[in-house]
Length: 291
Image (cartoon, rainbow, N blue to C red; front, side):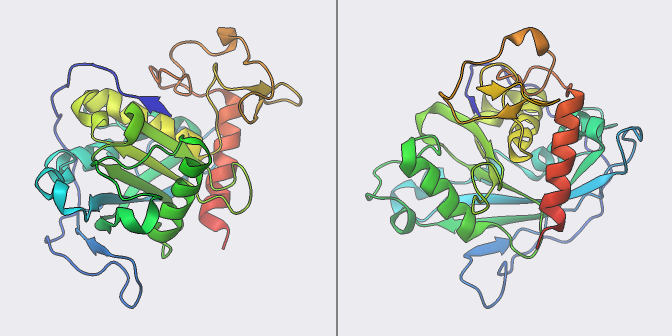
């Protein structure tokens, strides 16, 4: 997870070639209660060019949810598509050889290829999910105690795109508590955990294109079962460290995680350790293949 920082916004780089699809809207899944409309973004094919030494390529489809509150008090300040434009979203998941930094620049090292499968706008009714009627635009933080964790699972259970097993990426206008990014695996705490990545507008408005891409890549690491390289409690038993609940032991020293590793809490680099590559590939295969 990550908190917002005052870092200047970079210029949006040129986009890569994509297959064009005419714009339009439709119900996400006819006959269901999912209040989502297909935005019909141009789709990206899984990027090539990842190293072959770590194993065969693993293609992970990405479903992007633009979360739109139904609270009329915030209707005038609720258009995420003016912030996360088509160019921005496509740029995040462009092939690793694109001119700008992308999510796939990081994950090509594990031969995991993330490609946009669907973008949709979803109506989020706070009264259906939150304990009290909100008087704010933010969605509560998924780190806000037991309620936050329950809310994270509840929203993901309701909105994850069940037709495709992949990565569900939620875009929010604001996540309460200054939290700009959060990710968790569907197997992190129990078989019933519903995984996803949450990002708010600060990823783009505060960090800019390169650092926003690295933040999303970092949160995808959490979705694939990885913990922070330095400041999350881990155990050293076995060949690779394993994430443990906070407070169960002391955090490991940072000597084994140089600043240019993506799973540092500062997400300043693009590297993954061999253990992280193996663990992430295992989780990715589990995610796309488990019924």
